[in-house]
Image 1: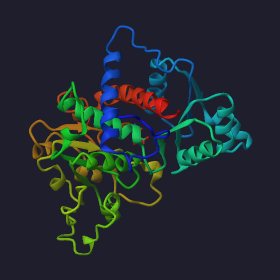
Image 2: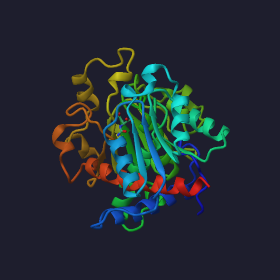
Image 3: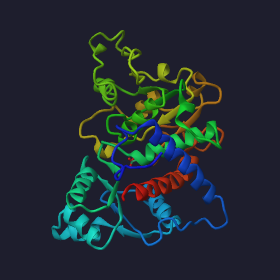
Image 4: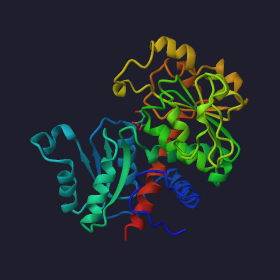
Length: 345
Ligand code: NCD
């Protein structure tokens, strides 16, 4: 397919063709990354600015490395030492980078909608700058969900990762769904593949509202079968299920995605204690016995060891895909920068 998307802000309207193009392009960059010389001249002369207004280890380094592997010039921005501290607005900061000839901006911000607002301003100015959302508040984190998808699909078919490999698979997403932009993006991509996505966590962190997230017309919520399980949206095209207990989500699951408890975003007392959370929803080897025998566990990181996942499981290379997720991240972000470069013109 011809890539036409200039900005990558959300996965809500991603098409199956777009997912497959990202997966196939990432597979070819993964091959580049396995060579002795891990660099291609694809974005030579182009400028990629990383505007991270919020903390990050892996996403920021991964985008920087991806841009460098594509031979782009990279600019890194640190809010604490920038003119933001002198009162400059975010839009003016973005316009400053535009005036320097930046071609793509990778943006993370603690408020939802900031990357979209900058993209709208860039379009209004008739610039060809592409904006990539690297995590905006609780809204979305598209590149993380795409690297999760790539990690899962390459496990199923290393040579030809594609969306359809996930059809009929069961994927549990466990933990702090409420505050998670990673969950929101993953819900779009994984349900688009035809997989069954099961959200599990305490009711305070898995609100009923999520049943409407991908199926806005889903209105069967008025009569839950039990207090622990809401009725599934089985008649709807996107299969999203909600659970307030862990067991039904883990039962026969092919993949379990655990999420960090985002304590920095919790404004109310949503949990009794971390110990109790671990007892009820922590992923341990014992609990995984409910899943398919070859189940794999993912976590976007950073991990609270011993809270959302037990420490031994996190380090078990037979089950944990955490390191592969980080490795996949570079190839997937190279693919996104490359495709956006081709869609800007
Ligand atoms: C996530 C994020 O920042 O949204 N991490 C990441 O990008 N790898 C998840 C988190 O912070 O828990």
